[in-house]
Image (tube, rainbow, N blue to C red; front, side, top):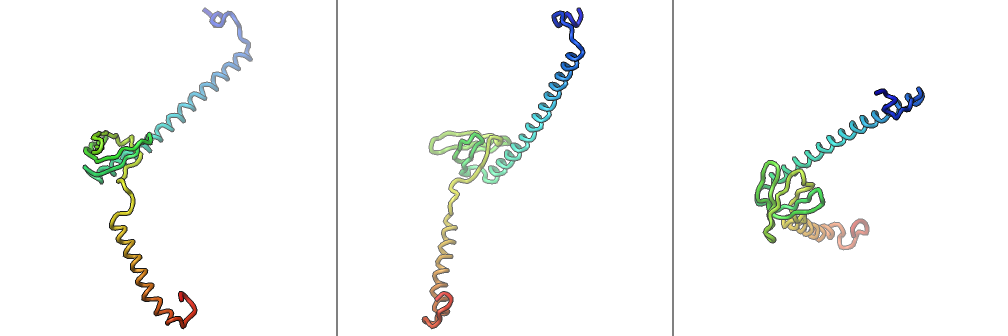
Length: 156
């Protein structure tokens, strides 16, 4: 069986043969370049996920068992509760209100934090003490600078 019979008895001219070779070479180049860049993007993505997973693991381990946490997952869902178990590749969050337990893999985690995030009692005490100090300073310092209204510059 000859090459001409495979192509339906048609003979190619030299120009058509060269054109088909060029098209074939371009197609091969596109496939090779696409494969190269596609594999490189996938490997770069896994390094980011590994870094986030190790960061989440370190945060959960630093908080410890029975710590109250709020976990934001990569699919934008949130899990709240207490950490009830920690393993090498996942941890378990138990919600005492609903009684459900959720096992979360570290590579699914976007962020782990303690809930609340507002000022603690200590923070409010510090702010109150600073405000009281400012008021007392104003009451004591203003009369010393103003001399009963004799001066007209500055804070008087």
